[in-house]
Length: 229
Image (cartoon, rainbow, N blue to C red; front, side, top):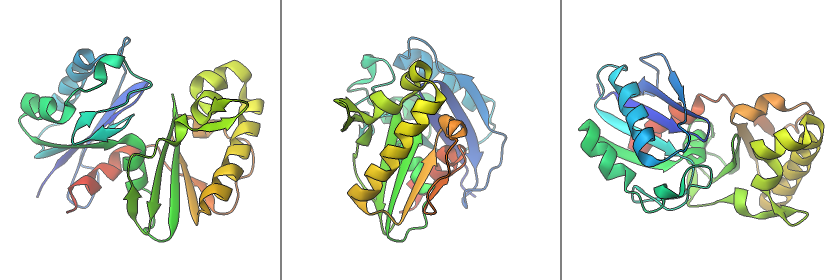
């Protein structure tokens, strides 16, 4: 049985768990705060420490908050700029001695949530605003919806990220989120929209029937899908 160490790197926390081949959990999820400043070396040190406490595993999947191409980090809006151009796949494989596959964190959250039918949009509400679009189970690559214009000259992330929530309060943030969901529904004609991330617990309005909140642990559980060839 192939055991997968699933890693979720976030703007506020780093989480790990070991999964079996079917995506069932073998270990308890472990979490530490993301170092500040969130540079590659201290984050790698935390990952290595977390991995050592998880026991045996055969391969590694990583969710990263930015665009990832061939294991190399292309954007990292909510981490340090030292990540740009960093070959995380190669470095992590060398440090832990296992094969590594890396994808955007919202993509992995989506792989753990989608039905695989029709147009399905995943939005993660955390430090930033992550997104992943799937059509009949196939990912539309490198969709960075968070940095697209939303309203009043600002992006989705500027209007709905954690900094905005802290600044304007829960009521206004919910008003904005309700508008954003309607906007994205008109844009993509989604069959389903899935909301993940730590700030989903701040939602106070009734969601449309085709919109649902998915557990944060999907950001780890979806990691097994990176190994389905």
